[in-house]
Image 1 (cartoon, rainbow, N blue to C red):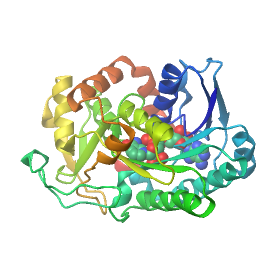
Image 2: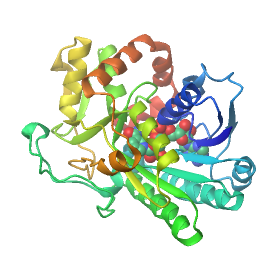
Image 3: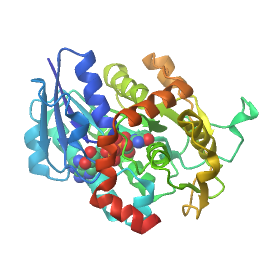
Amino acid sequence: MTRYLVTGGAGFIGSNLIRHLLETRPTAEIVNVDALTYAGNLESLTDVADDPRYTFLRADICDAEAVAAVMDGTDVVLHLAAESHVDRSIVSDAPFVRTNVLGTQTLLAAALAAGVDRFVHVSTDEVYGELPWRDPDDGDPSAPMFTEETPIAPRSPYSASKAASDHLALAYHHTHGMDVVVTRCSNNYGPYQFPEKLIPLMITHALEDRVLPVYGDGLYVRDWIHVLDHCRGILAAADRGGAGRVYNFGGDAEKTNLAVVTTLLAILGKPTDRIEHVKDRPGHDRRYAIDFSRAAEELGWTPQVGFEDGMQDTVRWYLENPTWWERVKSGAYWEWMKEQYG
Ligand SMILES: NC(=O)c1ccc[n+]([C@@H]2O[C@H](COP(=O)([O-])OP(=O)(O)OC[C@H]3O[C@@H](n4cnc5c(N)ncnc54)[C@H](O)[C@@H]3O)[C@@H](O)[C@H]2O)c1
């Protein structure tokens, strides 16, 4: 048996990762450590909650005692717990520094003391900063992309806190010889994503016939990856990544926000006249694009889900699971969102 400690397993990517691990690895034992913040939702794991290979522990990753206790006997740490929403980090950044920096340090120290075999630190392409704008449809193969050698230059409190945690994780490798791998992935979409993020926000707002708020001119460019491809990447890095190496993952699908929203509306058969351009996010990064050739060469990983298929799949999931997202959208957090953004 391999014992995986998954942090943030009640979140969007963590819950998909736990389900994928249980489905594909009969010898996996999983301990999910999650504080259940507004973004953590055990309803995303009801179908696996009774699996004897799965255990849940409600704990804060900044709690050194709880973390040390649960680390004992762990083979591989898959560290996903984080404050993850850029907009929230603009309103209030202290929880981001606390969880993303102090929480990561607490986990690294406990993993070092326990002598775990491998620590996978799950990070983001946002640590690289922004690229100059380009039209994703211009077909220019020479357009710049983030590689693992791109200097770290975060521009939001969220990405700055993630960059700090990346440096700490790599410092544990260089200083203590700990077996650490860092992954940096582009924007994820798929089932169980909290509807504060672009794609589930737009799908669920469209289903409720609400106005669809798009930041600024809507021409911000992101690379979109299906969450299952990201999960496969995290496990490929855990299995075959080099100690102290960084791996980028992307979906090979650069799109403007406006193109994403119009694709969703076309799938839902809804008109585009509900799109409303709203006040821009401060410091909004223009473009992210990711070169994942290292992951392809060293890990044998490439994304498997095409953008159109992934979008169809995701829309179907939200159509089939209204109870999950209606509950999330009626909670206290949603009231906070309405106060902030109307
Ligand atoms: N969503 C994306 O597009 C994306 C892209 C690249 C990287 N990432 C990274 O992947 C990871 C997971 O992202 P996500 O989208 O699933 O986030 P999420 O916000 O959906 O989930 C985060 C989880 O962490 C838990 N958590 C927060 N603070 C905690 C604490 N102090 N102690 C224990 N648990 C805590 C929350 O309860 C929640 O379950 C993050 O590290 C994020 O930076 C996300």
